[in-house]
Image 1 (tube, helix red, strand yellow):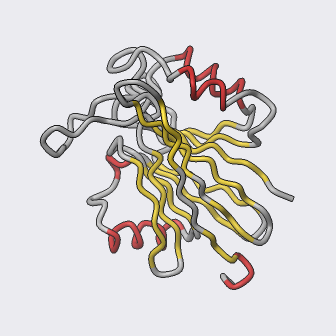
Image 2: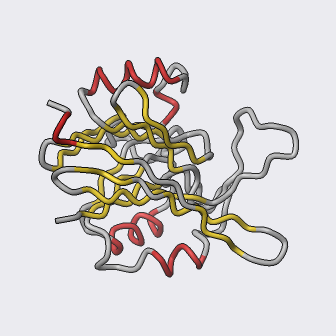
Length: 195
């Protein structure tokens, strides 16, 4: 049986963005998602309540700009069958180089590591582990390094988890001059060979 997990972060509402795009809200209707992993920088109560309405099982880690949320942990691990998923906000990482992400995944003893803070979607497999950065759900600008002319694209990730596998189809919306486009990315992990 599959279980849908929303991985979302870097919302920065209302400081850097007004809201989550309406096209996302149509996709993220209550009752479809079993769990939400928020990678920090939630920054407002209204968005917290919205995420809780999507899936009551809401797990959050502290982001650099979650200044009022002093009790949030810096990292968390959730377990689904034998699959362990860890998540952190990027400011706790020394670097996002694959070897350092692998070290963090090994430290947390997880099969999938989700990290935020860059505002850019990224998903890859490395040394038999998955690494996922859902980007910024609002497309909020970043104060970090960007390429000249680079625009932040609103994105999030839905993980379809079952007892034997995890699929990571990226639900990334790209805004052009005239319309929105959904771009997909799939990875497959065979959980039966992990232990």
